[in-house]
Structures are given as structure tokens and as C-alpha cells.
Length: 388
Image 1 (cartoon, rainbow, N blue to C red):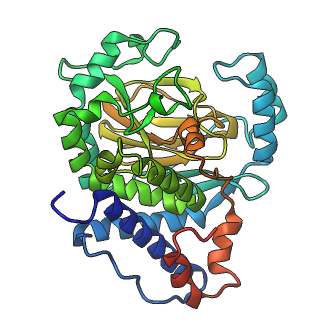
Image 2: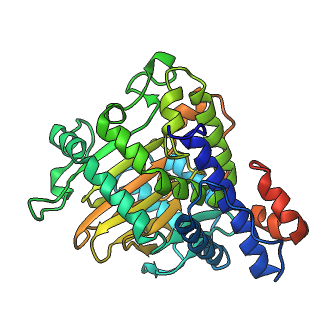
């Protein structure tokens, strides 16, 4: 590293700044008063500081503009665990849809920053259309180009037992220069069949290559911002993921790679030019957010969140946070080259590290920031990274 401060520590400082900025801007809008702007980290460029400010402003708008679904997400999760094992619209999914009815029959399109909450105030979706700057989008897009060889190799290899994720008919049939494929990678996760065994914890091959090392170096600004977005969406999940990374970082096998790892998320999937039928993701958690980011050379696409009756206009730069296990979702083919980056943490890694899990995020946590505590205490709360 060119600095004696590890890249991951700089990332954490950036997310702390973004959280402080969020509390400041939220207090300014709800109480018309707040302390001054929080001091920015020394490593943060003026350009990135401006990008953070725009992002935080839109996240404040999303929080202050919630739409409510008429049922309890916790009860929905209970029924999911009893009835829904994933997959298509079979009898189990139809029964679930009959029990937890959408607020209207047709899909409502979200085109501006909003949150979706259940009738108990649980925040189940953060929808942030057109959020990321062109510079950050370009970092993700250029990173996908670095991964081209690995994306295409995985697609050519295919994966037995997966009914649709590697189905070549779902990938874009465009110009010869298009990139198609799926690449899943992590600095430390379990190989298939070795869950829970220390010997089964491995670094993905892509990250050990020169292309992987260059990707980690170049991805820092984008990874820091996406990590900061999670810290605002769900501080307790950020705490859980930070503690998980610290455990892995103290394992001598992974210290070096986590010092330069550019994300609070311990796993990333890059999905190039693939549509997705309605599905649930099997390896997540019903109460944790996965973050989906779309970039590329296309005009628009739509992310369908079928159980809650919404679709999100998914133009380049859009960020969405929700549980891919809890909410059945899908994306139709875009009208150009679209690269989706999915950021997540696998439960088996969190459990192996013996880190306390995160619960469901609620509006009440945010009310504690700006309610009876008073504006003068907001900055002190933001300085405490894990106040929950």
C-alpha cells in the first residue's frame, strides 16, 4: 500500500463520514437545526466529497418519503420459511400471494428515492434510482471489463444443478463485443461442501490474479461509497459485517487481502447482460439487505419486486437495498449492455466467525437519531460507529 493506513481502514473512515453527514442532513430537514458539517477524512477528495453529499441528500429524501405495504414483514418471513423454498410461481408462492396481498393489483413504478416499509415500520426496501455519479458508474463498468475473461469462462463452464442462473438463453444476444457471464467472488468464503470448516475457507481465484489485484485497487472509491450506503441503510448490518471482516482479517491467511479489500461486503457477484426470472436468493438472510447496483450502456430496465407490488426504474447508476431471500424479484432484458453488481454476506461465513447477527431495520432507529435526543447530540452518536 502507498500509505501506512490500510485501504480497508480508509473505507471505514469514509463510511463514518457518510453516516455523520446523513444524521446532519436529516436533522437539518426534520428539525431545521443541526450542528455544523462533520469533518471529512483527509483521504477524501473534493470530488468524492461532493458525490457523497448528493448521495446522502437522496437517501434523506428516500427515508422521508416512505410507502407502506399493508402487512407485517415478520409474519411474511414466517410463512416463507414454512411454505416457500424458492423457485417459480407454484402452489406455495400462490398461497403466499393470497395471504399477503399487494396494495394494488398492478405494479407501481418507483422513479425517485423512496423507502418501502411494512405496517410495523420495518424498512424492507431502499429504492434509489439514478443515485451514482458517472465517475462511480465508470469504475464499476471498467471493473467489469477487467473481469471479462473470468465472466465468460464461468458462463462457458456452466454449473450443474442450477436451473436458470447459467442458462445461456437468458443472456444478451448483441454485438460481438458484448460481455456475458456471471462471476461470484470473495476474499474468504466456503467452498461447496466445506461450510463451517476452517480448511474450507478460501479466497476466490479471481482475486489472486493480476486482474483481481488491479480490480481491488481501482474499486476503492466505488466500494467505499456502496459500503457507506449500507451503513446508512442498516447500521446494525454494517456492524455485523465489519466485525465479520475483522475476524477474517486476523486470520493470517487473509490479513493481506482484507487490508486491500474495497468493500464492507465479503462477497460480490457481477452479472453481465443477463435477465432474471422471478426468484429468491437461497444463501442470504430474510432481514439483511443485499445491495444491487446497475451500470452500463442501456437506457432503462425494471427491477420487479413482485410480492410487494412495486417495480423500480433501474437506469444506470440505480442502487436498491432489500433482502433477495425475502422478496421475490426479477429483471427483464435491458435495451443495451447492463452490468449488475450484487453485494452481500453469506450467513455461513458470519456464523463461522461467531458474530452476532443483525435484525430487521426499522424506522424507529432513525427516529432515535432525530427525535427526543436533540440535534446537539447527533454528531456524538455518529462518532460512535455501532451505537445500536
